[in-house]
Image (tube, rainbow, N blue to C red; front, side, top):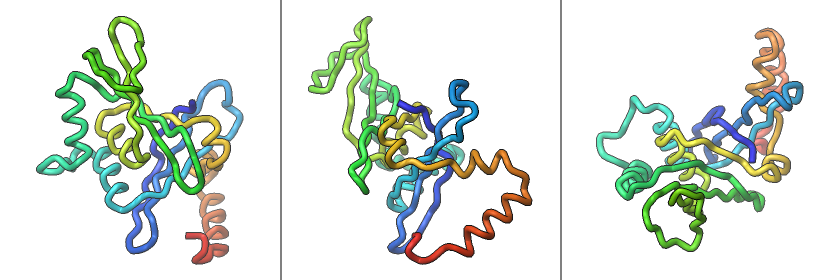
Length: 183
């Protein structure tokens, strides 16, 4: 599994989907290799919910579905351990929310971790899993195979290594070659 962070959220309206871009974290073993990114299309509401989880200063006056789920998890004595994006059947991504609990949960996907701690894996849409991860500060992981098949080079990482003039020239060239089919 590859640890990732949310690099950006591209909000769209109308029939065009919003996009959440996940970027792999830099690690010492692959310091010279370019970082990869994974773009996941989602709806505008889901993208906004992920963004609201990141920007905790803009908490809703009443809990929305993702807040409600996190509150329920906490009240049941569990916590969000991690989020895993673990499968890709183009164009659909699949994810699990992994909960850690010390209670007597009787779930079919429960695995014993020692010291009475259990992990429960819940199947989820990636957008819901990411919204929950942002609210709980849980780490996000992507399966190696998913990143290899659906990922690309992270433009943010590449941009950090170039001067601003080179960046402007690249962006200008990129925009000139765009067509409506690219969206």
